[in-house]
Length: 362
Image (spheres, rainbow, N blue to C red):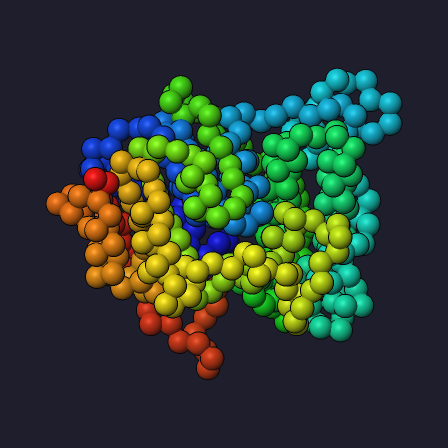
């Protein structure tokens, strides 16, 4: 999934930093997990990881990529009719979903030109055909959940698969804060459900990973003593619920239907907004989480265009841990761009530097 702040390309840098610091694998927490790329990498490296995030879409990815150790089996009843099989594979369930006839529903009505609300606001997030397919997939997964035919982890894996598939055919430039006014080639393709592969633990130390949806502070209180706390909070004033409201809608469902607002059909998100995206609050948020964390080692990934000044980060780290252990590692990378330069936007450049701050807690 195209995601602001996604660390997939920076994972090698993070793992190199951990190796250079000489940190041995143990229990880690990533309370700002996003698409769970770092949690997945840490699990592969042998860490037991407790992920978390405010967003339901992130929770689905955490379960699919970090919590699950293997692809689950599903009830044979999902095939419909008089099922003779006791269980079904994940791939077979995806084929059942793809065989469903398109059934226009909430997504078609509000996020395609085929719905009255979609026409009124000119919303072109999905073609009517893909919108109806998404409605069918999501409604059927909800039905299976209500009927007790799938468990929590199996349901979240299917939701992550749907979110990933919908993102591939979304008529956006990478974020959902707006839609493109003409159909892009990817948006006209038929939606396909491609399987996501859970991360198989290669060492016993990586067993017992978990996913969590909620505030970072709550996760840290539940996680207890940690060997590593990895922080990757939002950098700027863009609130993620507004930029990814449709993936969040697909993860949450629409029972009862949310009251949408604005031209883009934003969902209610007051409880999903982060202090890390607010000037005047982000520094207090950093100090609060450092004070709370029961962790031997702390890493903060933050780029050089973030709201937090470097000297504020350094002061917070030196105050909360052993000041003699404070270090900063840097790596340049190409900026994520959801659009091009134009009259209303001028990027300062393509190059950005990621800084990873480290301290050992006292």
